Structure formats: C-alpha cells, structure tokens
Image 1 (cartoon, rainbow, N blue to C red):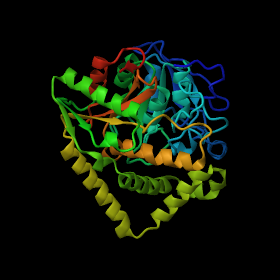
Image 2: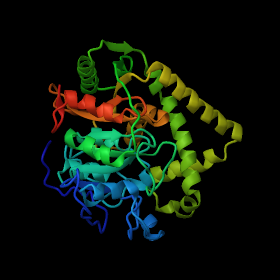
Image 3: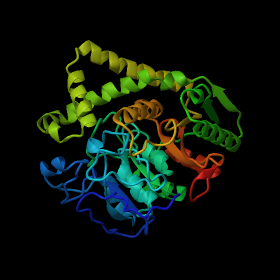
Amino acid sequence: MEGESRPPDCWVPRSFGIPAVSSGPLTGVTVAVKDMFAIEGHVSSFGLARWRETHSPSKYTSPVLARLLAAGASVAGLAKLDQLAWSIIGNVGEGTAPLNSAYPDRFTCGSSSGPASAVAAGLADVGLGTDTGGSVRAPAAACGLYGLRSTHRLISTEGVLPLAPSFDTVGVIARDLVFLRPVLDVIADEPVAARLARVALAVDLLLAGVGTATSESVRAVAMALARTLGCELAEGELAEFFLGEVGDLFSRIQARQVWTMHGPWLAAHIDSLAPDVAGRVRRGQQLSADPKHEQDADERAWRAYTAALNDAVPADTVLVVPVMPDLPPLRSASADELAEFRAGALRFTTPASLSGRPELVIPVRHRASGKLVGVGILGPAGADVELLGLARAICPPDGALVV
C-alpha cells in the first residue's frame, strides 16, 4: 500500500484503549472497534455527537467484545463510523473523514470507515465492525483489506446498536488473512457444517458497468477457487440477482426497519444528520406509512428473491462477485457522483444482505493496472469457516493476492 504521512483520523473524539482481561488465542492482537458496540461506562457515538449527547453510558459490554478481551485481544481504540451506520461512502461521520491509506485521495467507504482506516494504517490488527448493506465489505474492498460479513445471526448482535435487524451482522476486517479465523472462532456461535464443491461466476455481471481490473480480478479468483476445489468453473447468467430493482427492494425494507428502531429519536434530531442520511430517514418515515398491502408485497418479494437465489446458487456452491464497480469515490466527488457510486455498489452487496449469506472480501492486486480490487466470495449460510479455508488455499497469509 502507498504510504501516507497524514493522520488517519480514524478515532472518535475521546477514544480510548482497553487492555485484554486474560490471555488466550488472541493474545497480542489489537482491535479497532466501531463505536456502536456497548462498552460499560461508555456512550457510543453511532457516528454523530448528537447521539452521544442524548444517551446514557452503557451498563455492560457487548458479548462479542467481551469475548475478544477474554481471549487475549486488546482494544487499540474506538473507531469512527458513518452516521447511524447508514452509508456506504465513509464521508458522514464525526469530524474529518478517515484516511484511506491505500488511496489517500479517495474515501474509505463505509459505514465501518474508522476500523478499516485504522487497520489499513497499521494502527490495529483487526477491525470489528458491522455490515447491514455492505458496511464491512465496501471498506475492505476500498482499502485493500480482507473483510468478512458473517452469516446473519452467527455472531451475537447483543449490545450492538441496531440499524435494520433483519440484515445487521457483525463483521471483521484485517490486513492479513491469518487473523480472521482465530477471531471468528472466538466471537462466532457454532457454524453450520458446509461442504463446498462448486464455484460459480456470473459472466453477464462482469459486462454490466464493471471496470476491467475488477472484471479480470473476479475471474482470476473464480478460476483459482475452482482449481482448489478440483471442479469446473460454472459460468452462467446471474445478473438478475444484482439488478438495481433488487437494491431498491432492500433499501425500502431497510428504511422501514430503521424508522421502526429509531423513529422518535430521528424525528426529534433530524437536523443533526448529514443531508443524504436525513433524506434516507425521511424516506423511511414515508415508506413506513405505506399501505399494509404494499409493505407485505415487499416482504413477499424479499422471500421470493432469497428462494430464487438459493435455487440458482445452491448450498454446495461459492459465487464469486465484484464488491464495487471500480475504485472507491474520490474525496472531491460531487453529491451526484457519490449517489451513483452508492447505487452501483449496492447492486453487488445486496444479495448477501437479503439472503443472510456470508461473504468474504479478498483484496487483489491487479498486476496490469496496479489497482487494488476487492473480490467477494459469497457462500451458503453457515459456511463462514469454509470461505476462510478457500481463501487460505489461494491467498498469501499476509497481504493481497496478486493476479
């Protein structure tokens, strides 16, 4: 990664570290914690000062963080996030947007912007974040890191501020693949046994607004995984699962859930939100007032989508996909350019969110262009450990895969 002399601006105001409470399998591992995990005596920011000012300190520490501390890990600091964890850009948290050490002129993406920034800058070994619509996967891809969105409900979200509970997951970010399995072993409940035997590639997806480096990197990872499993690469047309309409469906359901979780507070404090976040909040309020038959229709469409994806990509299959169309947006990008990026990225991140599946982002250095590209490997529910095993078979233990 490119060096950068500027401070990463990844920590929230009055951030602090927490020492390990015991020794164990994670002794010596440092963690940057997204500031929405409960810590006894601390008021989480949820990405904005107004939230901190209007809430009381937590009376307990979230189980996932307690497990890490008991296993020997220490907290390097509390990291920034986009407001309400409801952005995929990385530009609407407190203060200066965190630095992307891989691309200093570009955003980290979000909403786990701070943990990704801290890990990319070498200030922590692991970032502990959340992923609802891509909030771990997009920052990992943007910053040239590994990132795991876990199977929905595999890792407890108790003590984690909710955004949209049907989609909220805990995720992990790291520079080096070697950290992910021991961390997952500590924080996850018992994974479902999975046997992966096939690798699928949506060839039509690579022709739909994806840059050359991204397309070639996705194909290279798919071929490497097929060789590892000793199977033929199954190339098919699956772009129907990545349409803009699918992203719109997810966004409607998510927005209603956000309003259900936080409506009264949001109505009272909407003036404290960035314009684009406030716009999503207002839309969530409006969508929540839709007739019941319209809301029920979206719920049915969600169930039908998941069933269709399960048929097209069965439980023994890994689907290799882009995470973003190309590089993350420039820090100088216009509002229209950021909106275009958001829509493009959600096309690729939504399938895992709607289906509850795990997705691992592999950082790839595309030799011809020099670009760092995030490639997603989407597995069946419960196959988190198996995805990490496949990645270990094709990736170096430290740093990005070169293709």
